[in-house]
Length: 282
Image (cartoon, rainbow, N blue to C red; front, side):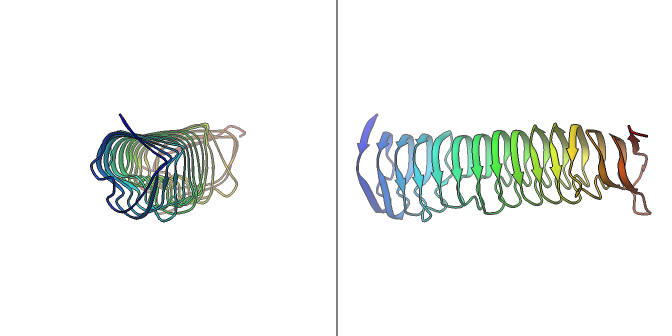
């Protein structure tokens, strides 16, 4: 593997087509497409300033790097990537990619990050600001995520999440096959219009969570007082720790909790309209 060290490159496609190369303390300055159509690369301690600096790169490891604000849409169409211990200030990274592992990475503008990524592993990652991270992703495994980005996880399939704190609105919409363990989910309208969603030992806050869901399972979850109109038109099996404020028109299933502040059943409930609600304290 050749080594490029302590150098700067700018302009249009300065490192186009390189392969079997390690970059150390390299800066990609102003310009476009600094590294493109490459394979088998390593980058350590590098700085990316210009636009679109890492496209169509297959087989790469990025460590201890920094992506400045100007390096927007920095990494697209690149398969088999590992990134660790990196800070990203630019939006719209990671699109149309396969087999990506991200560990100890901070996204300071997570706008439209992780779109159409398949086989994605995320560990100890922070997402800040921006909208719609993880759009259209498949086969996602998360261990340790803190996010205040808006509208996370939409139109995703096969997602497993552990130890996350997600503060947002409209998260996990129109998703399929989702399981979330030991996490805190804060925000309105959680997991609407989704299928096969399982929550285990999670705490949930925000209005109208878990509505219009088929195949919803909750094990030992708890809810904040602001969670009202829960489970509307959902097929649900829920074992809840503590009390809930309001349940509205659950379609079918069984809900067990300590107590319910109120239950709303009106003419809009969908068939079969046979959900069993059990209060332990009664």
